[in-house]
Length: 467
Image (cartoon, rainbow, N blue to C red; front, side):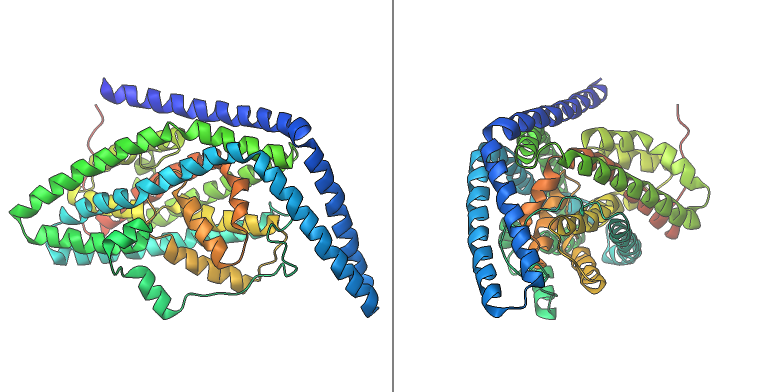
């Protein structure tokens, strides 16, 4: 009885999110035509003057004239900045609704990764098993992550969904290029290994938390009977945090309403055309990713890949309808065991997958990051895009299967490559719709990974018959 009531509650939340989405669009339209009408008109005039000045600069050869044009451009830039600031101030109450929600989501990520991963590692037992199975698991995870990131990069370059946005750079910099940056060996190692787990949790350094969790989980298993107390405590704590996640998710409709109202108020309804294109292209990418993952899985487990997808269809639908792969975690674990995977393999690979192998989120990261760059007219050479892909490969490890966690990673990547973080506002309004698809993909990817590792460990038995 209790199990059947959960999906109904989750479905209502999804309905509320969709309602809030359209309510935000309606509110944004009203604000755009009335409350922000003066600012938007002034911004259009100023932007047209800036464009004319840029064109004059392009063709001018006289140094005196060029100096005057550059000075005029600076003045226009300051005027545009003042208008943008005034407009942002007017819609700030709506933007704050989304900001608060994002902060609450970030609050959950670190403890959820820590508790879930410790339980998964500790249940495996001896260090040799952890090393052997962990190596095979990470091999699959790295291959799947690279495939997902690369697919996102290829598709966004092919479709170029951000080109139609033509947004002005908020930093008013005349240099619209990208400063190439890469992690040094020292920075990379500092990013992986924590000096303090408390500091890592305070700063949401997820990769550092994952490293500590692995050590903690192995040590917990090594002390035997005493470790069981810790495992029970961590397991209970993980369930408490999942409950907190449910509470926070109840605020999602309010955040969606605020984000969408703010975006439409500033950009107008025309932005929805680009959004519809972006959403369609992203879901096409997810479909291609499903096909690639299933083909790769079939190389290991054969025709049983079809049976696997059928077996986990319920958690896939649950993840899609709730926009949370974490919500589908318990049911996925149960059904994978019914598929024939041993419980020790499932309890290790699946929690680790929720930190290391979120394939749908991975594809979204390159897709979204490059979409934002395109929206601001920032050209990124292929070499820079590949370095961004590698940075995402590192920084994304450890993000939990919680809605909007990937936005945190994207924000950090944008800052690294000097792409305006304000571009995240373009995505937050439609993020629930995108999150539905990538959450379902995360469940598919982790289910296939668990079945593959089970097969490699000769631990894939016959499925239980459905009653």
